[in-house]
Image 1 (cartoon, rainbow, N blue to C red):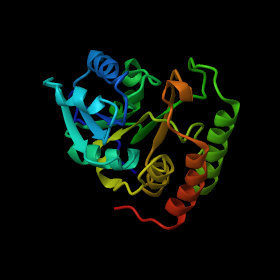
Image 2 (image 1 turned 90 degrees about the vertical axis):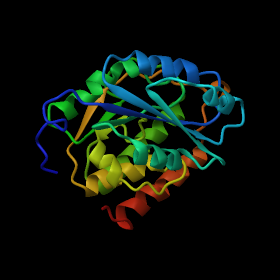
Image 3 (image 1 turned 45 degrees about the vertical axis):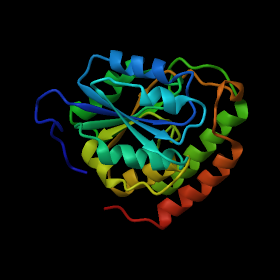
Length: 241
């Protein structure tokens, strides 16, 4: 893409923070507080994707001026929640925020700086470029690296962390994505579509405070297998608007 100008026309950009939520009653209020504490103009869009653990009740009671909440009757997956959130975003820029506490909203300014300066259309927050991170699962790490390598080979990108949650982008890009994946296939789907759009993609090092499965981590090896199919599908068999 050749859009080199500031997306806000020189003024302060408004950021739309999209938070997909499924069964996060123990962390949802904490992550909302952390996002609200970031001193940049923003709106927070929460999509509850059919929670059954009490998260739904917490969100129904939430009354904050900068937070909008939308509800899916049934669990449809992260991709479906992002589709809902992108369609309702009113900001100049968009960032994806998981509802757990693995990613730190205090890093938003660094993530959106390449967008504001006009150098980037999309920014990935990479967990594998020097940021503070919790030491966890070797095979999970290796799976991430393999999927990133496979995605890079087919998109001709040189990302270090395709599967990262933190993806910031111009709102105009988010509106064009037309997300089709239901679960975690959304990460390779977005990456393939950014490549097809000829987006200028930057990476920024981020911290990562990963959870283990006893703490509520949801992605499994089955999602890794599915991601291989999604990489192939969205590289070879999809078009972008």
